[in-house]
Length: 350
Ligand SMILES: *Cc1c(COP(=O)(O)O)cnc(C)c1O
Image (tube, rainbow, N blue to C red):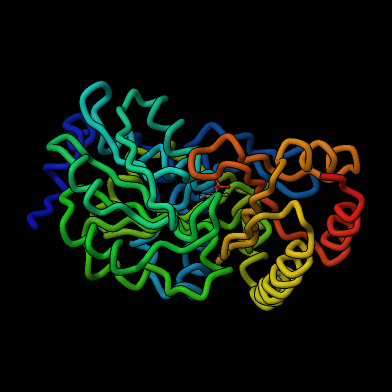
């Protein structure tokens, strides 16, 4: 393999002079800041937000380093993982020329981001076991294929993708392999973060939106080589993580014990929910899950979905998604919520 990041980048990105903010141009400590046209008087709030936030979120990254063992120079923070996904397209894919490989059924945002950036998508469906079709992927790749997105544990199927298959891609593909680990905290599989030093073409996505319980703050993480992170930092909007989110993330990252306790409880509840659902005759199959949701195949997905809506319980109808025929995706709730779900379904007439 001859992976070369500079050859992979779009020409305009390679030559980009990034925006230079006041905070970039003076980085020391001073007592009077008259360089950024901020309101020096303060904010009409209890806390002050009159100053621009740290563009590179160093304090937040240091806390993430303490948890993940990845140095700040290998971390990019985005306004949700969705920003990291978009930035991958904008950094590597020439609109109207390049393409990416997707392996459906998978997270919908990759396709949307491709469409927004006018980048063609080559779809190589997962096998019936929801694993990679490596031969199909090899056939789909051409000289203009820049990115392959692998979601593991996969949304909406819940299973992890075989590690050796992802490593085969990493070792043989000259573009970027994106491993989206939004649900890794619920999985017993090892994170691909450990492979960053091994593969220069690896980008691992994680998020504070799921296990960390911070979907509303919009903080996603990309872990990659220093060279890739440097590109992302140039392409991103200068202040992409706002000060309120940075402050709250700093506080939240001190509470890992709480998060780990929720993860344990969620896994216990997942097992309980699976056992409970198996009792219903209209449940045909429940797919093994490494995530905080389960994919449930039913004889009448529309009817079950509508029945639950009437009970005030909303699940996700995935029955129109290829390879997910008949399936509902159910997020694991609190013990009380899961109990409500099971109790309601006792009254469902197939
Ligand atoms: C929920 C989810 C995300 C998280 O996106 P954020 O923008 O960080 O909230 C990323 N990838 C997958 C596969 C997801 O299901």
